[in-house]
Image (cartoon, rainbow, N blue to C red; front, side, top):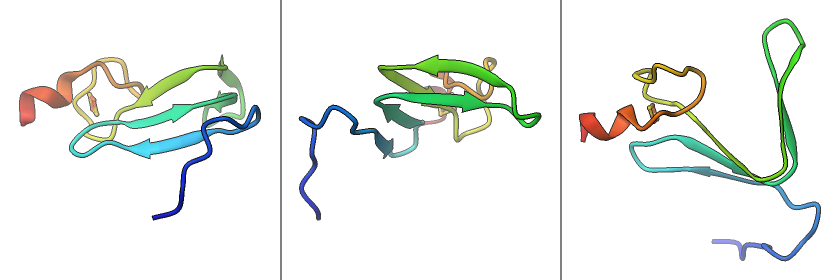
Amino acid sequence: MEELHHDKKDHTEVTLRPHGPLVIKGDFEVIDEDGKVIERKHQQMSFCRCRMSQKWPFCDGSHKAAH
Ligand code: FES
């Protein structure tokens, strides 16, 4: 596995959590289907992959009930 580079200022990290969300850490924008920016983040955000979230497309922890 390649070494992670947490100390870079412009580094953005995407992690697929086992049986959980896709987590993005860093500077990024979330753009919807129409091309509109719905979030600007400079820290961390979790996106649902299980389709159980009531806050789609964001993870609300509902995936924990399935495991
Ligand atoms: S991954 Fe967390 S609610 Fe779907």
